[in-house]
Amino acid sequence: MASVDSSGSSVSGRLRSGDMLHVGLAVVLLLGAWSVGGLEVSTGKVSSIEAMNGSTVLLPCTYSSCIGIKNLYFNWKYNDNGTFLKLCEAEIPTEKVEPKVHVFHDRVEFVGSSKTNNISILLWNITFEDEGEYTCFARNPKEKNRNHSAIFTLIVVDQMKEVDNTLTVLIVSVLGGVIGLVIIIMVIKAVVLHFLGKGNEKTWCVNGKWPALVEHFVKSEDPKTHYTTISHPHTDSGRLHCSCPVAVCRHFT
Image (tube, rainbow, N blue to C red; front, side, top):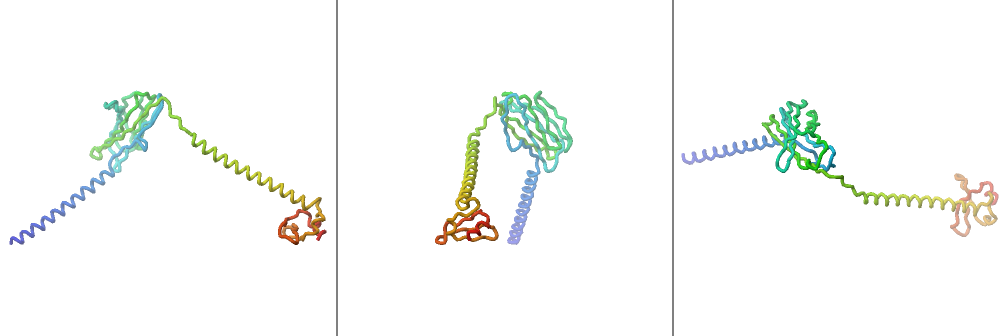
């Protein structure tokens, strides 16, 4: 009997262990699904910007949620040396419904839209005192008040930095010079070949007639091109095409 009880106790222990494992897996899966579909806010791929003193700056922010929103609350705050100053806040009842935004700063303007999940703001006529971190915060009651925030950093400068284009200009100049040199070489080559051709014609064909010297050469006519080829009978070099009329060339055959 004792051995039976021991075996039964061991089996029940294994069953409880299996149940705990299943419960643990279920909790992990639920948490994974919750994190994937949870509320997220973003200030874009670039989380900072440099802007000139006196200009107007867009502070971007968007939200997303796979399970949707209901009475989504959001606000913008400015970190003033550890003190967070609220710039604006609003509540979006449902998707595609525009919120009634409460603005607490005279140079802040809400430019977002719930149709595009956009809760961005404009900051007009910025000063050096506006430099710092701006936090975009959102909370979704539909996700048991899940909240998320993103920080956007504003850097105010007196003048924008000049971009050094020396390397770009140098590369473009070198490429332009090489291309121009190639074109010049091609033009010179074409001109030289043209005058060489003219010189050959004047050497072998004078006033449309063959010189007497050509009588010592072997001449053959190509019926397709209507050119006569002349060559010396004792050498393979010196072969060329003559532009004399074929009838004149035949006279010396």
